Length: 505
Image 1 (cartoon, helix red, strand yellow):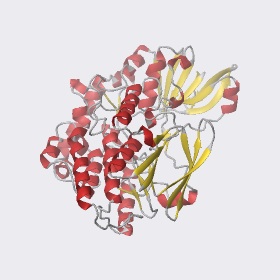
Image 2 (cartoon, rainbow, N blue to C red):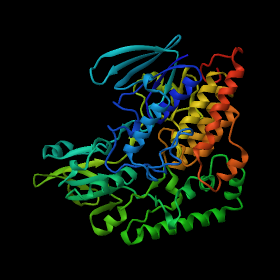
Image 3 (cartoon, rainbow, N blue to C red):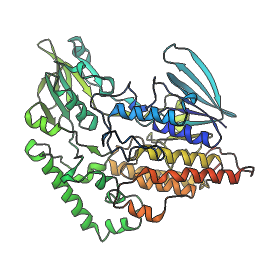
Image 4 (cartoon, rainbow, N blue to C red):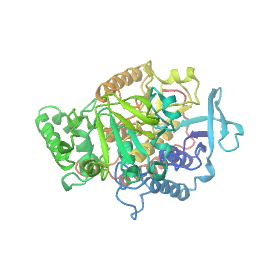
């Protein structure tokens, strides 16, 4: 089939590599001038690095270089993806600087209208199948602040972290960073030595995990099946039933001990930075690593954290750009930097088509985070953001390849719709609405991977899964699955199969 892929991040690159190996003709459209998605040089803020270590943040058949530090930097991740493209000769199938303006279904597939972001030239492409891999972190979110016109008239600037690429942009300025997630804290530390003042405005403090709590690498706590099992899944399995049943006191004790350890190690009581909610809420939407040097700079007075407050209004005090906080404080602010996350959008789809893909609350209704209920000839890859996003995207690409072969037997769409709605209600309750339109599966990364692999009827061995309870998941142990799926494809060659359409088609 002729397949179009929107996006050249981890998901888009895994899709083109896998689907091409399964015999399809694939073209990737990427609006940035380079591959990488969130790691593109056009989106990297100073100080950005990975949330998990290099051995887990990679594709199954392409480890990160051993020369990389344990937590690679943004430029290193992008270099890794460039090397992946070269290793598997994917460049000829990728069109950079090419924005998909619209994607419209036709009787035989899709018509894509693209625009070159450099020349403005538009073009039309027809494909038989479409893979949406534009990521769940698509468009920077900047809150609507009152008083913006007055503030900018006094010389103030409002930007998202992804729009600032060098520390020099903050040199000598009074910088106010909005947010308390990883990007906000990373950015604050990166610019704090150059800025005149650095303030972090935190509406709500969240728990952060040190890279080495108590001297133990956090990967042994969070990147194992045991770490995942400490949080209650919608359908607990095996030992999880014990942890959330008769063994719940044990589970609660583990989390309480970890909370005390993190509080001590990061000096949260001394700094007045203990979150109001318990550590269990660390997995409400994502797990944020503590930024190196953040606590020390707060203690030294280089960074000021204004907790439990928001910007009430942008203003000009004595002719200088400033912000007024909800607690009454007024801060000088030459630069307001929003570290408040991203919005997930599919702007290339019509409103009518997006309504068919989502429920009444705007959440994507995707079986296994991949397959729509009633929109034919389209799949989503990478809409299962997890601790192991490269591996999760790769497994999703395998799932799609098997679906296109007619190898996946799906339940009736109404049955799936009921299951999806139950899952979305559970996600909304568990995350307090912070689930990125139903696309964020953290902390249940391995559950999602297992469910996809159950559908394709191949998984790593039971002993391997048992080891993953106590040791971090190693993507390399999954590399042989692709070879097994390709062997299955050869055995099915020439046999009649159903043409994949919508869910259950």
